[in-house]
Image (cartoon, rainbow over all chains, first blue to last red; front, top):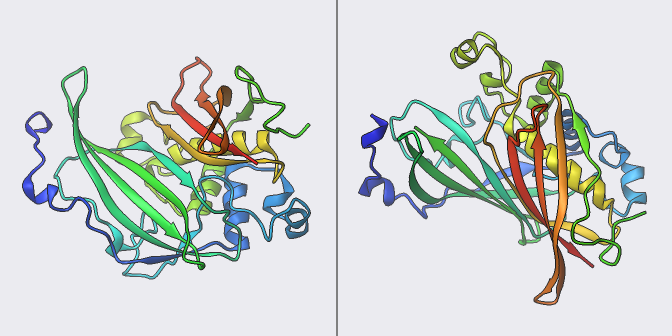
Length: 163
Length: 140
């Protein structure tokens, strides 16, 4: 089935379409939970005084953490906690999903206490045929996070691979 | 000694960061990042039954690479991450060693910024780079 997969005009029409905005909260508890999950022992991610002594205004968000999407039952996706209305991926019918990795561009420092507004966009659709002849359908999804000052704080570009 | 523009050189290696995520650590990470994909905690999930195990989250490896770079930089000492990335090309399993490594590939000035490009990657016990990536650091 995957060998004959094609990107349809209907799929192409979704490229560039933006989702409604969604709020991500960067809280002290969220920073501590993420840092604990990674295994950081550096006190700047747990102790506000240590963070301020290091020059931060509050606990800094560890790299790759941009806060927690507000969870609302029925409006949030149960597995990934992201808002259902911000899922801009296309229907494809392929059974297997792979996390292809991510590119993150930082523009502003992110600390606990920040509230970020995220807009997602389907940035591109691509096909790649592996050496073993399997067609991989690659969706690049952009997540743009804007802070309360109206400045873009960080942009993620995630590759979701289906086959 | 804090990392600064003046004291880094092309070819420098970042201090290695060792990880060995247990299932409990992976559950902590799931709680921290809000990703509850059963692939990472449910041994009865069809893919885990097929593989014989749950898998370490790709985002865990990405975050660990972020820790590698941020720990090398220190805090507000003159450098910050401008861009980072990684791909996921292989699987890591619970209780297995993951070593995060990095090197300084290029030190240069561009558009008035002092920059350094790093190659970063994770390595399993067989030397396989399951999450190769890159980072660009901007120095003040």
